[in-house]
Amino acid sequence: MTRPSEITRERIMKSAERLFAERGYDGTSIRAIVTKARVNQAAINYHFDGKDGLYREVLREAFRTLTAQQLEHADEMKALSREAALTAFIRRQLHPLLARDESSRHMRIFNWETVRPTTVFRKLLSEEAAPFMGLAVELVRRFQPEADERTSMAAAVWLLGQCSVFLRNREQLAEPPMGLVLDEAAVDWLADTISRWAAGGLGRRA
Image (cartoon, rainbow, N blue to C red; front, side, top):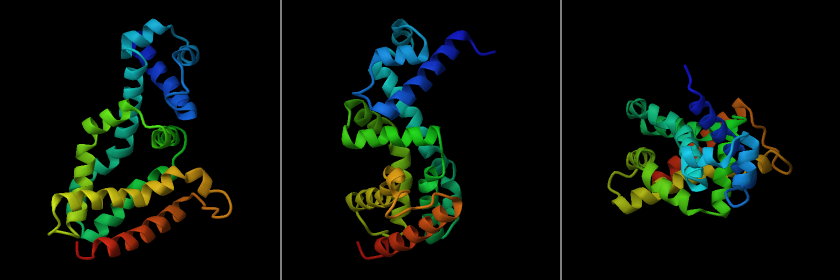
């Protein structure tokens, strides 16, 4: 049975997630969160130790949700050829293009961090990103086995960037002049296309 305190915590999280997605960290006040969640400020302090703690939990949930599928398929990728593993990785990276509601809000929160980075976000990445980045580095090393650690990490960041540019600009890309149709077939095409380009780039001598 769910306890009342757990229900309150979840209500605060969902309300804060929506507001941070709409307004960013700086544009979201504790008062706005309190009003939307229908709680008092003491509840936020109790569950999250203030606004920074709440934002950190929202970011952690968003990051884990967006990377969980990749990590769940890590062992499967090892059994695939490097090209097939690359395509599968990119397709999972682009999957939020098909998502609505929660995944869209997560992407908008990360978009805010692109233009107005926070200390909370930087600290969270230092704590949470290692398993996911390790998976990306392992993948690019299959194309560049002789590359040193710095080059492998740079290649992994570059690979992620090939997907994130579409995720960050999803709403704009759906409009003219590009008019990207965000359906399953379009995302499959985009994943296959980016994979071919990325394989060509990663396949070059480091």
